[in-house]
Amino acid sequence: MRSIVVMAVLMIVAALPAAYSALPDYIVLYFNFDEGGGNKAVDLSQYGNNGEITGNPEWVDGKSGKAIHLDGSSVVITVPPSDSLTSLTSPLSVGAWIKPVSFPVEWQCLIEMEGSADDRTNGWKIGFHNQNPVFTTYGHKDHFAD
Image 1 (cartoon, rainbow, N blue to C red):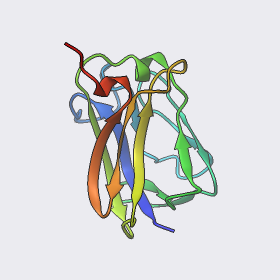
Image 2: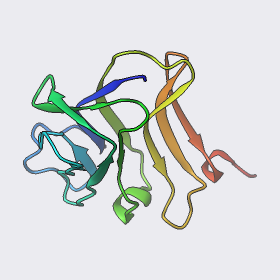
Image 3: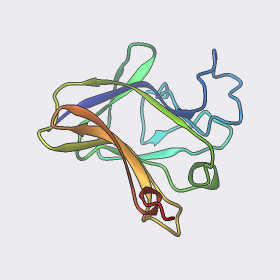
C-alpha cells in the first residue's frame, strides 16, 4: 500500500518557534514523534491533544529524531475533537515533514480536520490526488450567501 513517512513534526501554527520547549499558546497541536514507540502520539503543545495510533505503527529514525511510518491505510493517528482544535477563528498554518515512498493513484489524505464533536459536516483536508498535493475544504464553510 502507499507509504508515507511523517517525519519529525505535525503542527498547526501561526509561526514556527525556534524551540518547542516553551511553545506559544497559539500552537494548538505539535507532534515530533520522538517518543519512538507505542500507540500514542504525544502533543507537545499546552493543550494535550494527544493522538491515538491505530494499526501497527513502525517507528523509524527520521531526519531529526524519530519518525513514524504510515502505510496509507491501516496506520492512522486520531486526535479527539477539543475546543483548542475545533474553535479556531483566525488564519492557521499546517505543516508536516513527509517522505512519500510512492504516490497514490487516487486520493490519499495526510491530515484532516473535521468540525466539532457535534458538527462533523465541515472541515478541511491536506493530501495527494493523482500525485499532486491538494488542500480542500468541505461543508458549510465552503458556501457563501449574500
